[in-house]
Length: 285
Figure 1 (cartoon, rainbow, N blue to C red):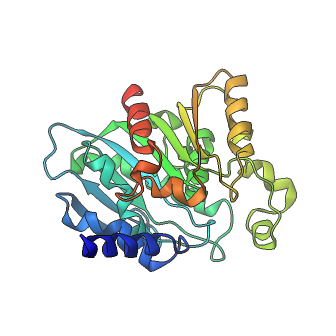
Figure 2: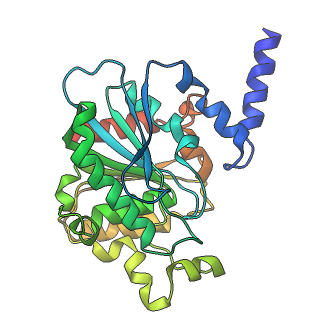
């Protein structure tokens, strides 16, 4: 029992480190390696080195499986798909295929290049997921933080998918975790990334809400100080004003890191995030 307690304490210590620490991701991803998940790694969806994705599927798929494309966060500047394998597991266990793409990042590129990568990845998944027994007619987008911002823009602004001969109607629904959907850059790197100021409306998701976008689920932690709830409120209000479909949930006692951690095996009891997302996807087929 004492040994088990020591292990649990060590795990909690690792997960309490900054989100970018290798220790936290190592612990969060441990169950993936012992699960019956099939993993296809480093599949190119474009010509650039950064344009690769990983696909997680159930070991046995009975009929075409619904598909989630999940974009990780990292301030549009850092992170990689391998770190977020844990985010796939709760959905794969429920019969979903999960795709986690990498994408180009600042300072190598600026807006809207990383959104273009996200749209290219979604287009590739739509065209090819059938080869992995995925159902492209049930294609969901999701993401955390800046990844939620990317996925929301692809969902809301038809321009991105039109570049690949597709319409946003290929997206069945969107579920975003703590996305900065409607912010104004204040830090120098963000001003450089998204500027000049006259370009800011083009990176704000409410700009493109017209009531015809796919259903959107907006999830946020009440204690989030990194991405304030105003982002959710402004996007929610615009969707409602335009007659679109939107659902929101605010989790008490959850901050910016913990809402992502709620998809992991250790923090899943912090918030019913997994169940809420699955319920939303199952109600929108």
